[in-house]
Length: 190
Image (cartoon, helix red, strand yellow):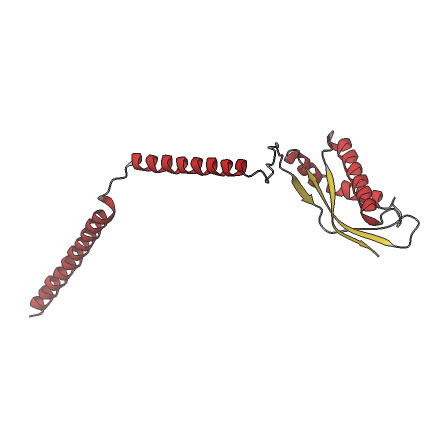
C-alpha cells in the first residue's frame, strides 16, 4: 500500500513537471512568434532612408535660398559680413583677491577671470601656475591708488596691468603668455 502511494506521487509530480516545462516552452514560442509578426516582418530598406535624407536636405537648401532672397530684396536690412571667429576660453580664479591700495587705508577686493582665444594650453598653464599668478595679481593691484581705479577707465587700466603681469609671469615660466583679457567678476572698494 505504501509503494502504491509513493508511485502515484512520483507519477503526479513528474506529470506536473512536464506540464510546467511544456507550458513554458509554449509561452516562449508564442512570444517569439508575436514579436516576429509585429517587428520582424518589415525589413529595413536603406534606400527609403536615403531618399528621406535627400528630400530633407533639398527642403533645407530651398528654405535657405528663400531666406537669402528675402534678405536681399529688403533694402532696409543690413547684412552682417562673414568674419572668421575664434572660440574664446575663460578661466575664473577661485575666491577673491583682497589687498590694500597704495597710499590709502582702503582695501580693494575683486574676483578675477581671464580669457584667451589661443588653444587650451594657455588655460592649462594659468591653472598650473595659479599660485604664482595670484601673487603677481595681488602685487599689481597694490600698485594702484584709490584715485587710479575710479571709473571705467581706472578699472580698464587695472585690468590691462594685471593682464600684462600675468603674461610676463607666464612667459618666464612657460615661454608664452597668451592671456588676452582680464575680467572682473566682482569689484568692491572698502
